[in-house]
Image 1 (cartoon, rainbow, N blue to C red):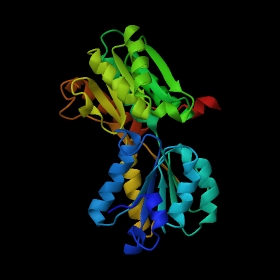
Image 2: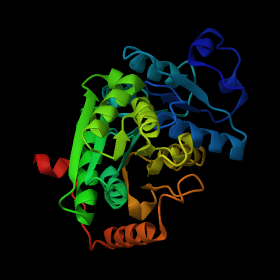
Image 3: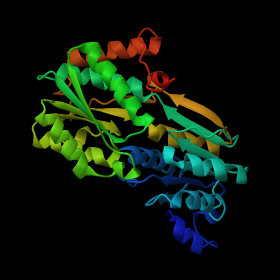
Image 4: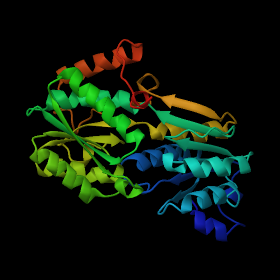
Length: 327
């Protein structure tokens, strides 16, 4: 039985931390562990670890920004956690402050870099897999216009868009790309209504495929695609099953692998600080083809995408990341 953070704070004499020699912990970002996207991928990795090892984990879901520092502190102290994973870039400042105060605890931050000796920073080459789904969008489009809906307007999400644009134009330089960001606060990750509105606007302007990188907001994008008999592209987790026949593919960001590896490495005493950057060559990002979208992703499309993927891994096809454009 997993123990919630706040229950743990009140029952220090019992619970997971007392029953196990090794206790991992995970703190999910805004939107919750069942957002069908980024957080849920992290949850999948934690669950895989639990199922394989029989070791339970502590967990908490952030509902407001003020909880981050408190959650990290309580996991590291009252929770007796050996490793604490913060799911999302928003944990950066809190972890920079908390990690040095607990040198015997290992920390992991996803989608950011914290330069502390007891912190593993895991980032992903989102632009590489976004390039591939951009190719898919261009090949599937019949109107010559495709779209993108981002969540919070930050460089991380701009990196998704930048890779997507390159993939689209790799197939057809003449295709028009419509792009909107949902907002500039964390609320942008959990507004399906706004996501649907932005996607609808792009469909109204001629787009017939829309890719989202917007967390829970993206569920509205995919719903709008289904409602308009158009195509959406999912993100982070495999979202093909949400609207079969209307989700062209999903850009996979293997947050599940990052969390699983962090827990397992910590259990084995092998979790070191430093930067881990995962791309196509590491199977850290990718795209999804399954029974829900195989009728949409033709053999010819997959063949071309796989060829491009091989060239990217070999270094023969360079996908520029957004960050390099800002220097």
